[in-house]
Length: 91
Image: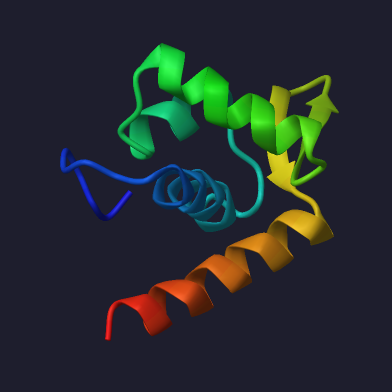
């Protein structure tokens, strides 16, 4: 999200995906997440699949708004830990 086009590590991409969902009031559609995290379709699905399979993101099915995705408690914890790690590493 904040890194734009520069080369990012897997964990930076995952953090960006989690950040997008969190900033969208914990409810975002796939296309919005993909665009705001600056990912192409292939990379998006690889990382998004990891987050879904790991229980970090959950599918929310709302008949009036369609399917969107939100962070689980585990996803919120991962996001927090990645932010802490970013502070430690960037020093």
